[in-house]
Every structure is written in structure tokens, then in C-alpha cells.
Length: 298
Image (tube, rainbow, N blue to C red; front, side):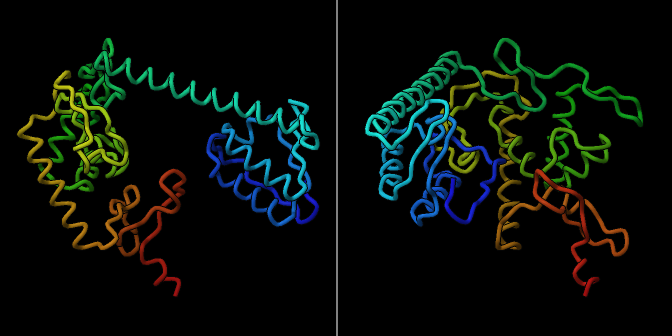
């Protein structure tokens, strides 16, 4: 409840209750600090947070500005000392549950590593008793010559295309031309991430987070070769050289170094044949438009 200037917080953003830096929580604290809130109503106390220290700071903020906290499911009112004590006690239980979840997740990681099991299934592979093996089942049929390709055949063809064409866009264009559409990958980033995965060379590697999938290999944990290899070590040296050349050209010719949106260079304007760019983000792309549309409008 607010005493003035009612506001509707967005409900489409889902953030963890253990994070006290979430945008909605920060906005609420800001409004409390400016005296715009009279009561804070939550369904359960764990919606406020799962850290005793964090919840204690929030309670102190509310007490300082005369704001009452009401928990519907727990029937708690912070107007009383016992109510504030009850909140701290429940926050302690919430913090303990978060720690238990972390322990269970870590136990799962330790078990997987003890068995040398991979986390993800790459395109061209499938899991068999926990290990990666070639995807030998029929995947698609080419319309031109009625050739039936397995998943591993498609993956190997994509590798050959990249080794021949030596660019991400050119390889994506070839995939569309041969397979009649997107097969395996929609973006240059997806293709580069797949090609640089050591599992394609048969290696089992842990600790390849999003931040150091390719650039910071000193943090990787190699376990050895456990899978069938799609790329030989000699081919990887050639692919790595292509990567370095692409990186150099992108940095030299484009100062930002950013990737383009999906198929931005593959779509052409039917009037001037200039390149088209995607409208919207990677997830909500609604179409394409000519990069010279501003010149037409002016």
C-alpha cells in the first residue's frame, strides 16, 4: 500500500529471492526511503529475501521510516517486537534452505565429475549411458538427390564447409543452401561456440563457463579423451587459425567488435540489394529491414 503516487512494478521479470540487488527490491527500498510507502504486503516472508542480514537491513529501513511489513500466509505484523523476531527467525530458515540447495547442486557436480560424465549434448552427438556418441540416426533427407543424412553426417558437412569457406556467414549461407534452412545453428555465435567445443575433438572438459569458453583456457579442467571425435587435432589447429583471422579482421574493420544479429548479412533488400538487419533482439526478432531505410525516409 502506498500513500501517494501508486506504482505498478513489472511482473514479467523473475529474479531470485536470495539476490538483494534485484531491480524490484531496489525500487521498493528507494520508495520507502522517500516516504512514499505506508505498508509492505507480501504473500510469504521468503519473498523479501533468504538472507538474515539482508532481511534485517530491510526491516531496519522499514522501522526507520514507519513502514509496516505484513506477511499474508504467515500472519505476521511487524508492529510488534514478536513479529519482527518471527521474521528474523523465518529468514534464518530461508537462508539455511538456500545453503542446502547449493550443497545438493555441488553434490550433483561432484558426482558427475567422479563418473566423467558430460553436461551437454552437442549437435552431431547423442548420449549413450552418459557418454557422447555419434548421432547415427536419420536426421534429414535432401530434396535434390534424396540422400538421407544422419546427425553426425550433417555435423561433419558443416565442419567441412567452414574449413573450405573460412567465414561464419559464408558457412551459414552454405548450410541454408544445401539443407534448405537452418540446421544446427541460427547465428555465427552458435556456430563458433560449437566449433570451439573440445568435445568435438573427443575431450571431456569441465569449468567452461560462458565467460571463458574459448578465451581463458587456463581455467579449464581437462579429463582426457572419452568421446568419438568429429574434428582431428590437425583440423583444430586450422580452425583455430581461422578464428584468429576472423577476430583480427573484425577488430580491424569494426571497432566495436560486436557480432551482427542473426542472418543480418544474408538477407538482401529487393529494391537496392543492400544488406538487411533484424528488427528487435535475438529472441524477439520480428523481421528485417534495409540498412539504408533512413536514406529513403529522408
